[in-house]
Image (cartoon, rainbow, N blue to C red; front, side, top):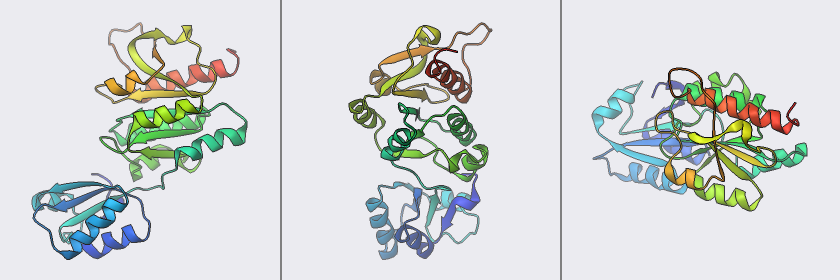
Length: 248
C-alpha cells in the first residue's frame, strides 16, 4: 500500500471516516482485536459493504505510517465512486450510444490511472471496476490519470457479470480483449458497447468472458505475444472510436 495519504489510522479516526460518508476501499483489522470499538467499526464496514482483511499486528505495523494504528487501518479512496446509472446518464446527456470500459481485475494503480486517462480521451462515458481483487481509486491512480478522474465517472461494483447482465438489458453489447479472438478490424464495434479488459497477467476471467458477446484480438507482428493491459485497452478503444466516427 504505497499511498500514505489514503490511509486512516486509529479507532476513532476510522469510525468517524465511515460515519462521515467517506469512501473506504479496504479495512485492515488486527485478528485478535474484538472489543467494542472494533465491533462498531466492523458494523459500519458491513453497512458500507467494505472489504475487511483480518491481519496480524505485524502486518498492521508494516502498513502504518504513524505507529498508532490501534489495531485498525482504513484505506480510503482518493475520489468518490460514481454509480453505473451515472455513466448511462452521461451518455444520454451527450446524445450518444453508451461507450463503457470494464476492467476485470486491474491491480497496478499506474495501469488503472492510464486507462482512465485513455477512456476520457477516447470519449468513453465511464469506467467500471470490480470491488474485489483490483486496485481502487488511490492517489497514484488519480495522479496517473492526469486529471481525467475529474471528468470520467468510475463505478465500483460487487459483481461484474451481474452488472453486465443489467447493462445488456439496456442494449449494451460487450467485447473483450483476447489473443484468440476475431481480429478487431473485422468486427462491428459500433452502437452501445462495453469494452472489457482483463488482469495484467491472467487476462479476462473465464466467467466474465462467457458474458461477452464478442472477443477481439489485436493483430501483432512482433516477437512477443501480448501488450501491456493499458496499451491494449487504448488500441481497442480507438478502434471503437474510429468505427463510431464512420470508419474515417
